[in-house]
Amino acid sequence: MEGYRLKEYSCFTSAGACFILSVVYVASLYVWNSPHNRDHPSTIKKRFFSVFIMMFVSPLFLYYFSQEHILQKATLWQLLGLRLHGLLPAIVIPMFLTMVLFLGPLSMQGFSGLWKLYAGIKNVWISGVNIFNIIFEAEPMYWMSNLTNLIWLRNHVVAPLSEEFTFRACMLPLLLQCFRPMTAVFVCPLFFGVAHFHHMVERMRNGLDFKRALMISCFQFSYTTLFGAYSAFLFAKTGHFVAPFAAHAFCNHMGFPDFAEILTYKDPQRIILISLFFIGLLGWCALLTPLTNPALYDNHLFWKNN
Image (cartoon, rainbow, N blue to C red):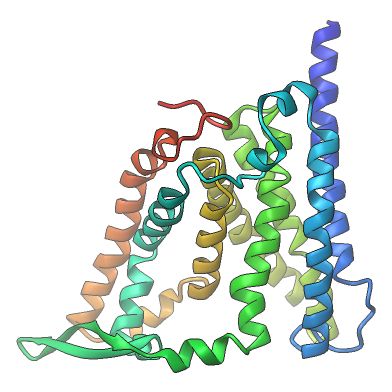
């Protein structure tokens, strides 16, 4: 009975630490009491500083609330997923896996010509139909302009970096020390999803009524929680911080798939797109387990090899 109570207390402590950390993270965004909205340059710069400080504070939670035998088994850097062994596969394979999931939206960008923003391209026509666009030569101006755009940097670099570091690298090891891996994978994103409810306050400040703001926030909670589970799964299986970070940055770039846009295309493009959406989902499901085998990433810490 004593051992059972100790385990129960340990899980309560780990979950409590994660909850406090998520509250502190969100609170750090509002300490400035800025009169401007979240997209104003001054607000973005102040929040950059806040999350930069949080990246020093968050590991303290992990170190303080980790059980002694965990710290004897691995260094703090290893718990945070900051290690060299298996780094290259952790960069390439999870990104490829995530791109397979987004095969439909990626193809839709190709059909719409959006890829012209990313690279110089030439069209490929088959039987009078523009089937696809192929990368021809680099287009650096798009990327150069983004590197000076604070909103782009926030969405594609700073937010994925700070959120994955806090909500995955610092929280998930705490949960994994007392929960089973799959349980921890589904518990961890709840903190991540709830943390996004702070956007509801900003939406109401911008004129949305409470009901509308709540509906949007609940929808955001749903897909951020689903993504959070996938991100936590990548971290636990690879043992690398870079895996969920790269996936997060890519998903922020793609955004939530606009399924209604498919209806704006005419056949045969519409049929091809619908097929690619299903192929991407089925391919991701089929590849998820083999491509996240811990052996590929030399991960012996969070998930035992199959």
